[in-house]
Amino acid sequence: MLSTNLTSATAPSNPGEKRFLEVKDSKTGKIIKINVEEGNAIRSVAFEQLDLVCLDPGFMNTAISRSSISYIDGEKGILRYRGYDIEELAEKSSFLEVAFLLINGELPDRNQLNLWEERVTKHSYLHENMVTLLKQFRYDAHPMGMVISSIAAMGTFYEDANPSLQGSDLFLKGADKDCVKVDSLRFKQIYRILGKLPTIAASAYRHRIGKPYNNPVNNLNYTGNFLYMLDRLSEVNYHPNPVLARALEKLWIIHAEHEMNCSTAAMRHLSSSRVDPYTSIAGASGALYGPLHGGACEAVLHMLEEIGTKENIPKFIEEVKQRKKKLMGFGHRIYRSYDPRAKIVKKVADEVFQVLGKEPMIEIAVELEQIALNDPYFKERKLYPNVDFYTGLVYKCLGFPADYYPVLFLIPRCAGWLAHWIESLEDPEVKIFRPKQVYTGIDHRKYVPLNHRKPAQANNADALRSFISPMSKRRSND
Ligand SMILES: CC(C)(COP(=O)(O)OP(=O)(O)OC[C@H]1O[C@@H](n2cnc3c(N)ncnc32)[C@H](O)[C@@H]1OP(=O)(O)O)[C@@H](O)C(=O)NCCC(=O)NCCS
Image (cartoon, rainbow, N blue to C red):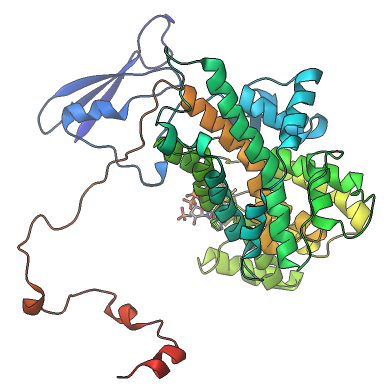
């Protein structure tokens, strides 16, 4: 057994006084002292002195870096980007302004914002081969698959931005390097990604509906241009509805960053190998796609469709409590009270409903929320609606198909990922991510030649035989 002692732990009276943990291994009697660093952090590597490893599936209490990009207080329901409240940013800023803030640490002044917008906008056109690539997908390809593959493919267009070709320290600064050059190389990739992503996403959408892709235009803002690329048919001077464009912009602001979630950790994980940012973003997008993360929004909609009517809610809640179902759009690893973004989405929903009419499923969602919030099962576990609970309904009302919701999450989240990419490049503590495992397999055994082996005792032997389609059986000569 280990015993721990937090010496001068509870609020050291003298600010200069060092706080440390004293850990004793009851087996060996060895005692180690571990410094408590800024942010109440201790280094797990210290436990190596006791020949121990910290096992933390799901990173329940492991910080992978220090970060100054966003802050969450899960108990109070606070989310801030670089110190600014999310509510204020959603109300007063544009998406590109927020992207500038996240990536550069400060809000831009007028000139900086103009330059930033101009640079991003100027990078919104796609190479014709990218367009050809997008056109090769099946007519019904999931848009996330199209977008993720296209982002990875984007990297192949920029040899100058590939550390595998140019050297592993391509994006790093150093004594012998021109830092301005490194910064501008980094910014070039940021402009390309922020600029082209909406074009790729809009092309994936148009592909699904069998319409020719629209080229971007420079006279609309970020979300306005996106809606233009989605919706313009033959109109010469098509302009998206400004209320809807602003509503989408608010949703994108609140989705832009959310500290060390699954996809952002993936972004940092991939970047730690020094791979190019396109590959890192494609990997992070893959993590985002999962139904427990960015895919939850799509899952909420399917859940509401399955519930169908208000009368079916109590039965559904019972099934959740019996663990037969999950209440999608509820619960969060960090928020233990209301997700502040969910409140903003509710307001945005009203703005959108005023233009397009109320989405009928909202009634089921509101009732479901009320019932869950008053049920001891959800109360005890501190399960509240998260950002995805209402976002899907807004997107449905805006006419987006459910499988497109993760794409609408991915586009803004790229701003946050890029901020983490830059922060990790600047972090002197960054090392390649290489977690440990606790090995539970067979220690060592002798190799048996193929002809002498008994059938493997695979616990999924039947599964090996499955997935043989009738067509394959027909073609088989056995
Ligand atoms: C977000 C999420 C993955 C967080 O997971 P987590 O931090 O690992 O939390 P846990 O899964 O340990 O949940 C703690 C408890 O609440 C329950 N719980 C959590 N989310 C729940 C949900 N959406 N519906 C029903 N029960 C839920 C768990 O079953 C667990 O109960 P137990 O202690 O009796 O076993 C999880 O809440 C979830 O799957 N939510 C639905 C998907 C979703 O909306 N994702 C978007 C997040 S922005």
